[in-house]
Structure formats: C-alpha cells, structure tokens
Amino acid sequence: MKTIHITDLREMEEIIRKCSYCTLSLVDEEGNPYAVPMNFAYHEGTIYLHSGQTGSKVEMARRNPRVCINFCDGHELVYMHKQMACSYSMKSKSVICKGRVSFVDDMAEKRRLLDIFMRHYTDNECGYSEPAVRNVLIWAVQVEEMTCRSFGLRAREI
Image (cartoon, rainbow, N blue to C red):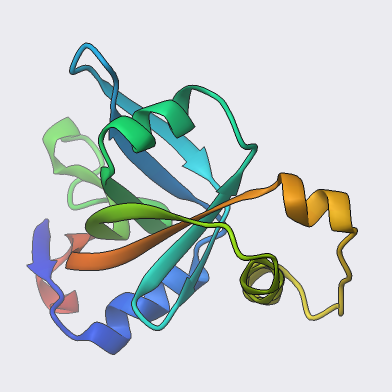
C-alpha cells in the first residue's frame, strides 16, 4: 500500500468540504494533548468552529491559541492479500491544518459566520435568536500550514 502527498490546494479544500466534522487538537495546562471532534465551516483559508463561551477547550485555546485541526475523508478497509494482516490498510484522505485561534465578538460578523456554518450542512435558510448569537463563541483559525495525504492506495491507483 502506498501513501501519497497531495499538494493541490483545491483538492485539499475539497476533502475538507466533504467532511462532516473535524478533530481539534489543543494542549492543556499541564502540556498534555487534548483532541475533540467539532462541527466546522471552512471559508477562504479560515476554519470556523463554534462552542459555548466557557469550558476546558476554550480555556486551553485562550492560554495557548496554537491548534492543529484534522479532517479525514473516506474509511474503506483495503488489502493486497486477504490472508496477510500486514497488507491491510484503511483507504482515506487526511488534511492537517495548523494555525492560531482568535475569537469573533462582533454580533453581525457572528451572524455572517453562522450562515457559512449552516451552508456547510444544509441548503435551508436559517435564522438566529439574539440570545443564541450572543451566547455562541465563534472560533476563527487562519490556516498557516496545510498538509494532505492519501493512504491505502494500491500501486495501480497512484
């Protein structure tokens, strides 16, 4: 099985758009890794996340805004030889993005970004109550580094 590096930005962005969630990785106060799945939106080189105003991950991001976000598309078990365990692999594509978190406070900007979130998940037009917009915390992660790999490919697929 082969792994290939994907460097085309459009292809990497297409993989991101196919995903229904991402995994956000932070570092806690003791220096331990912390990873959590989150809903997201991606727009013009920025990943947007949302959460409540408080909590462990918010505290971690405020203390250390450097984050890593993983997107993974496709999960197909493949093998070269049915009876050889080491020939099995999971066929998938993975994008890893690194950047810094900033938080969006402006109410109008929050509404605009919530529209981007909703377009990622549905074509339905949605409204937002004032308390919901006020109480949501929008995370903006400007992508500083993006890498991509395709795993579990047979030689003829490369």
